Length: 77
Image (cartoon, rainbow, N blue to C red; front, side, top):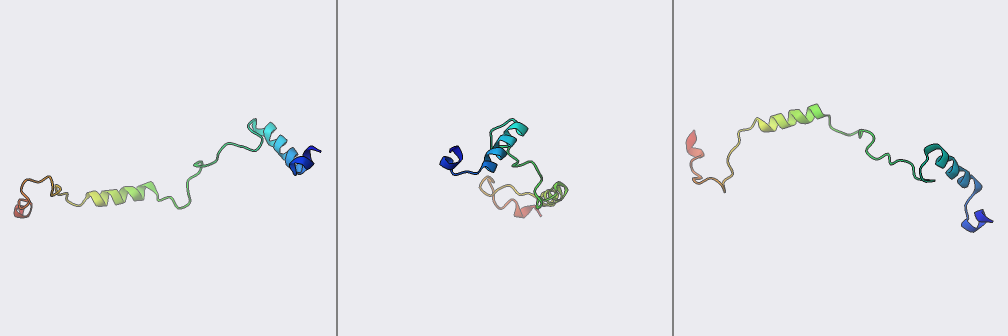
């Protein structure tokens, strides 16, 4: 009668009970697996460091809105 009221199979009930005994957590909720593995398309850290080093190799210029004299940069050469 319980199975008919909820319109579920006996197999589903056994599965839920088995999971409950194995993992000692909620019947259908196992531990969340999100973030537990490295994505297959993750860019390697050494490559990212090379890109950062390349970007940092360019000379930096003070932003134009903080410079008192905007012509002084071009006159340095």
